[in-house]
Length: 130
Image (cartoon, helix red, strand yellow):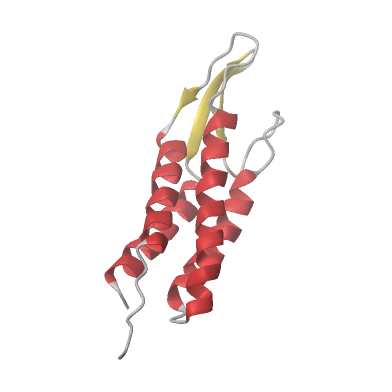
């Protein structure tokens, strides 16, 4: 297994772990509310951590398959994972009605790890035999 595949798999594991880490904290009437990718009760965020876990798992499986078609499909899944993490950053960190959330490490770490996995997908090199 190549070095960039190992780094990509580590980044995928970090993305999966970040789904349960705190993403933001919002000051509400009853006190502070902390939202993660898997828990967002009382908001309209949904649960984007589930799709992050699904796409990250698919990307990790494709890292393990040493075929050309897997590398090509992994370009799509890695790009989608990076775009989804960026979308989550924009969605969760916006201010609404004068209330701005405090961003936490899970949101940033998820974006950095998904971008790292996408860069590892882009760095895939095929060995040509003459």
